[in-house]
Amino acid sequence: MNFWEYLSDRRELLTFEAWQHASMVFQCVLAALVIGTVIGVAVYRSPRAAALATGTAGVIFTIPALALLGLLITPFGLGVAPSVVALTLYSLLPILRNTIVGLNGVDPALVDAARGIGMSRRMILLRVQLPLAWPVVLTGVRVATQLAMGVGAIAAYASGPGLGEQIFSGLARLGGANAVNMTLAGTLGVIILALLFDACYLLIGRLTTPRGIRA
Image 1 (tube, one colour):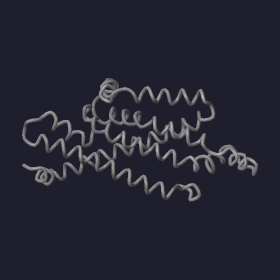
Image 2 (image 1 turned 90 degrees about the vertical axis):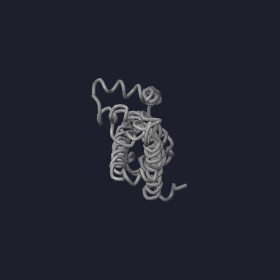
Image 3 (image 1 turned 90 degrees about the horizontal axis):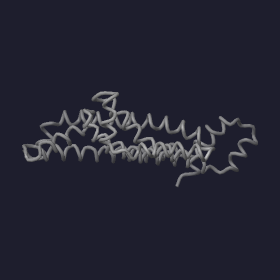
Image 4 (image 1 turned 45 degrees about the vertical axis):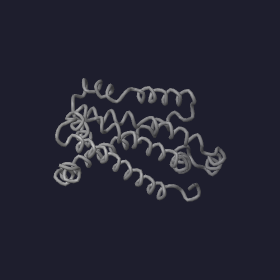
C-alpha cells in the first residue's frame, strides 16, 4: 500500500487523531497562557521574583519529554492526564517570559499619564499595559504552541491522544507493512497542524493588536 492509499484507507482515523492532537495542544496552551499571564503580572515588578519564576519554568523546560512523561505516569496514570500536564508545563516558559518582558517594555511615561488621569492600578494594567504587551505575549504563545505540537506527539509514550500514536506505532513496526506510512502520516499531520495554528495566530495578532503599535 502506497502512502496515498494509506491516507485514503485510514482517513477517518487520521482525522480523528488530528482533531485530538489539535484540541489537546489548544487546551494546554490556553491553560499555560492563563497561568503564565497571572504569574507574569504578579512578578514582573520584582526582578528577583521574575528571575525565580522564569528560572523555575526553565528548569521544568529542560527535563526531557520522555522523562517528564514517565514521572507523571506515577501520580496520574496513563492517558490524557499526564499528557495534558506535560504539555502545559512545557508551554509555560515562553509565555511567562514574554509576559514579563512585554509588561516591562511598556513605556513608563504612558503608565504615568494613565495614573495622572485617575486610572487605578488595575485599570492601567487592563487598559494600558496588557494591550501594549500583547504582541510580545502572543509571540510567546506562538512559540509555546510549536513546542507543544512536538511534545504532543511524544505524549503517545504515555498513551496520550493525538497523532503521536501513528508515529510511535510506525517506529515500533519498522520493516513491517505500512510502518513508514504510519510514521510519515503522523509527522506530516503534526507539521500541517503547526502551520495552521501559526497562521491563525498571525490573524489573531492582526485583529487584536492596537493599530498604533502594529509592526
